[in-house]
Image (cartoon, rainbow, N blue to C red; front, side, top):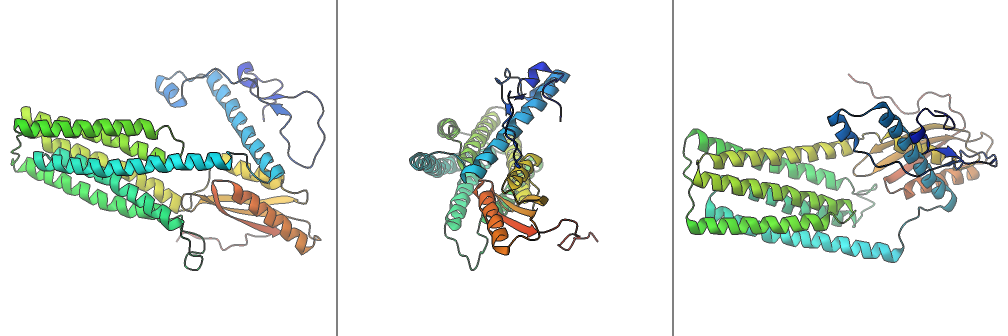
Length: 395
């Protein structure tokens, strides 16, 4: 690690400065001797800098020190958990008030999705536009995805320890995978219908003045309501509410594309309507393909980020004075949360009761972290043995 007392980059080094004075030696890893100075002046995001090609060496060094600051903040969080046995957070009243606001946002989104979907179905029937039908399909996605989130949340609140001994958290990603497969099939059907219309030259699309007025009024009204819901839902930090905000934003995009394609087909060329439908169907398939990949990664047991493993290792070492070695720290996705496996080495002469209490207390601390669903702590008296589990071999 770079000595913070004499760094090359003075600006970045100000983030990590050792406090003056001697500190009491302890068996614990202790980073309290490092204080955080005033934050650096806000810089453009890394992605923007890469695009502009202006990421200089000074910015790289500053980014490194910023990562060290974030690491120390994570260690401080683990120290709080080790000392107090809980993580600081909102009071019970604040949590209940926030939960009520989040439930209200979800209920408003679901009711709006139902009403707006019915309005777009009517617009699809009145216009016969393939592009508007494809936009209506996207609204159906929002409606059904909300139902899946509600159903899985309800299922997870009714545990059955005999049929599902480790809980039902994996129902949500599995439900999304099934749902995305059905929606991809519907999207492909719209693409095939649009291609058939283009190839056979059967596109006979025209709107009367009354139909056009109805379609424009409905689609613009739906778009404005969805835009208001985007702004409202983005004011929350809850991941589910933020997912609703993203769905509302996607609906704004598809509404605009569908309406523009229908109007252009009515005034310029009829083939624009099926082309717009193909674009919307491809957009919908792509959006849900990304969602499928994210949920597949959550089910296949992908490892946690190195920064998270660092925090777990730090917590395990500082858990108890009797911990001699840390053999294994492993965290992997198993649904929306992590499963954690930890192997710690205790003195061979330690009584079983004391060793059990140390391991159980560590397990309870790990499971207090919001990212962790379940933790398994294995106790050992040495760390030079062969792997205790059968190693999978690729054939």
